[in-house]
Length: 406
Image (spheres, rainbow, N blue to C red):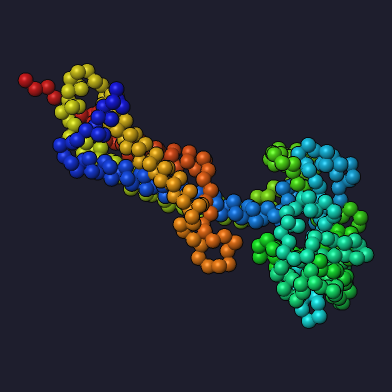
């Protein structure tokens, strides 16, 4: 009954045309606010997905690091237990060390990453090669894969280089500060390939043989700075992370891809929530319009309210009619806004309505990614604001005194 009255009040012509206009202005404002929120959140989702795809080519599904010390050396039995986990596909040992790469007068500081043979199955880096091939050689003849920025800094083309590059790394436990060069090891690596992911990696990473890095830095057999793990397709990363953490105990941290670059993802999410809060103000503006429209409607329908009260309608029914009116206005605007948002996101994805300025980006348009969670969040926000807005005029209508006339 409440919805039937509300529906008639919504579509029936009012004696004051301004009420009808204000009501549909509030619907339009809700539509614009809902569409704007969903489109903006979808754009942030698109950037988050883009960053995840870029960083996912370098970061493994899971990474094990010691909690309090720099080096770890897991017993063989514990390594086998991790490999036998049904979620684990491959397991790679890693030693990372700062170093300096030099060719003649060219030199650059690099992040040296020594990896074993399982690394191509753990990381997507080998799939990002732009020149040459992926190979790390052996301890006697180490080979290296360079980021394109590192490659440019030392003036080589990895697929055409005929000379080795000098690689300097600090030795473990070096304490003689009187002769800094004595604390450094010098080795020769042959560049065989280069990769391009994004500048953070391209300008500093060098991937080479694990045994060679251990030898140059005088680490023990089995010493690692981290272990990287790839999961089987369809495996639950959260479950695998908890199982491996339980197996290793408190001495190790098991990080997923988000935790490995927590600052970046936290910044993206913080910006997303800040934009959500700002654009929610559009819905608040719509709420003020709705309060005005419903307040004027209550004044116009005062005679109807008197008739309903004379027929025995209580305050609850009167309040419910006008709350239902606000619900209909909000629902129409919300659904229309969602439809508009879906259409705009589809057009952006297909035709790039809003391009990215500049030519240095990997993509030429703003990415969008529609997620049902955003529809639930925005829909809940719109309905909450709309129902709160209509509560005040509806309560005022329910409190009107019954006036009996002869």
